[in-house]
Length: 176
Image 1 (cartoon, rainbow, N blue to C red):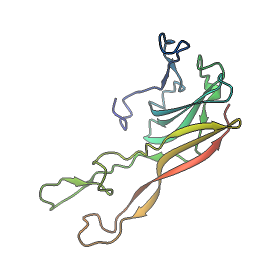
Image 2 (cartoon, rainbow, N blue to C red):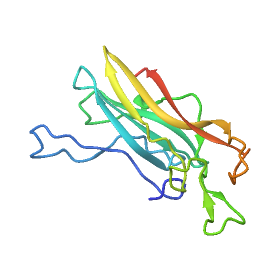
Image 3 (cartoon, rainbow, N blue to C red):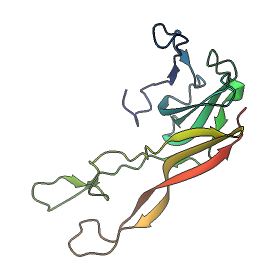
């Protein structure tokens, strides 16, 4: 599976142990099985005050390449995650930006990244989380919907270019 490749497929699986890890339930697919949503990655899990309520947030990549944070909800300790309980966490999708910026005339380097601390690849904020408090569910995630201009610097090969910026978002989510 290669995230970013719409021909590849992945799902979020949930397993539970009721005896301290000696035995486990068979895996249950938590995300809806939708042909136009081939990728589901980077899950985060929260158990509500009522242990029957299980919430899993994850990223969904659609066939067109756009990405959304979604949440699966179970009210039977994770035995099932009905499609009608799946929730889109954000009202705005984002695209995976290729963060490898091709360079010309740079000896020894074929590409760079606008954040020099990150390896050249696709950028997906892995700041994905979910928690519960006082009967509410809260999700946090990173996405690249916002743009930023690279500061102008004569020594920077991508000086002055506009590129996606990884930002962290947080929202109270109505669990289904």
